Image (cartoon, rainbow, N blue to C red; front, top):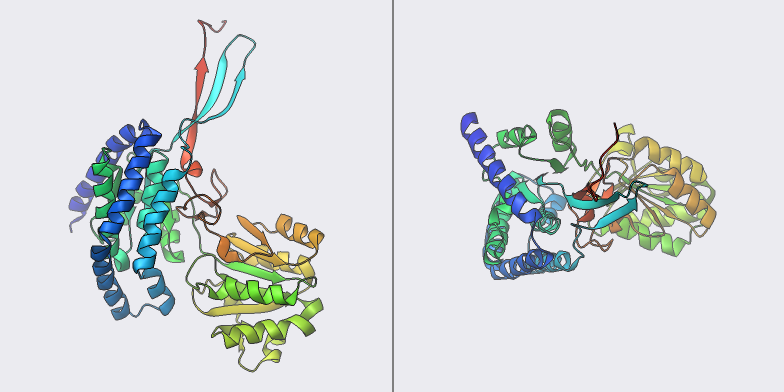
Length: 422
């Protein structure tokens, strides 16, 4: 596709999104709820078509040599399609985040001032291989009164298009403009560059993907970003950790689903319990089919452990691989994490409340867990219905980005004829 054609295509998407956003911003909660519930019904109705489209993507993914973890992220079955539909229903049931009076006060001159939540406007979402993001992102944007322009990865293109068709059908049947959610209808990479320059059409962009995608978006975007960086997540097993709890949490944090951004990529063990905790944890991971890359102490406990390189401490594997290291207590753990983490999610396993507090206060990450798997880093698990991503930045939204984080605010100033003295 020629550059001029892509520009025309993208600007048309942007114009239609902006028009739809104006309508959606004024929509009642009942109308948005009806649209989401109808869209959920359409997802279920379209399940055979969605699975057929996904089969094409899976075939293409295998031909491209995608890893087992990436193929797992790509795959849709009846269970995952039903989860998408339920996710829409859960978002529909959330309180309306638009029009809330966040604070209000009176001035001595009689003015009454309110800070009121309003939608951001038009949100662009650029994501890669997880097709369920299509439904989650569209639902969150609609509930928060925002129009959405979604650009999925080439690996999940057929699946995303099929999901989007079901969503738009449901929205249209419910009486809202179906252009409030749109899919970029091309896999041409030039469309991404065009989105990043559309500051007149798009108010914020959410990149969800690997390091290469996020780096490109950060470097090129003229549109404000919610940064969703890689998930180099850590679990630290402290000297006051219960070993059985540590084994259970670590195994889940690494192996439940290795391809999600909340998967633990580095295990840190307190030097003080190396003799009692290190070998059981390492053996458990190896026996579960996880490759372990460790420091010298970790290599010494099992011949199957591979030597860790300097790069391993800065790697998001998204696979059945973990790096393991001994550290000098909670101070050493926090120092290592703040040096190597992507500021996504960290966990401490300990029965000592003071240690847990020191860890959670010291780690400079969006989510910190105490005696709970890093795989809870998910908007649904936080009770937010779903999330459009995990923001690792510092501005406006941090951690799971749900409907409340997709709103900004305006001030309403209520008077009775006041004028400002000269």
